[in-house]
Image 1 (cartoon, one colour):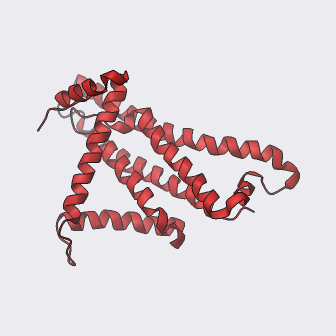
Image 2 (image 1 turned 180 degrees about the horizontal axis):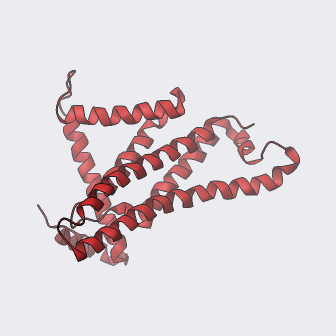
Image 3 (image 1 turned 135 degrees about the horizontal axis):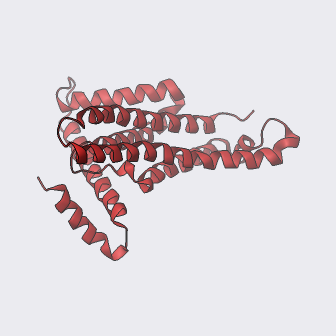
Length: 229
């Protein structure tokens, strides 16, 4: 197995002409590493599919089935077309969170650029879906229920929708970056058994943050599908 330090050094050299910061290069490197791992995992899980699943196929079907049920419960039947987007974000964020618990590895979600990219994807998808579903009538989502308050409500709603990007970005980044800093401090002070409780808590935090991001993404997209009142 290639040591994380050697992997990072190689990737930093590749990105050196782009003048990307060291932290940014680390986030990009681990993002591509996670993408490659998920591609390999999906290939192995879907190779030679069986009617009676077992092993890796069974494990992945439990995960995908769980996410699909959550999408259907939150968004209903009309949420099915958005299942690939929601599942991709959920699995990527979860694996990105968990990889930071491996000594020597860095979670991409502890870098604000990664969390901002995920938040922008949700933001763009929300409004593309809204325009596609309602056409020009989608503007009603920003005008409020009272016509004479529409000009003021429009600016309030626009600010509110842009604040979703900031909220999604900072919530995930703050939790993962804070946990990473705490782990580094504990490993520096006592590298053996003392950091273990924080690592176990990190598993819980990783799942919760992936779930919250996925849930908010579903709620935002669901809101754009509804008729404005």
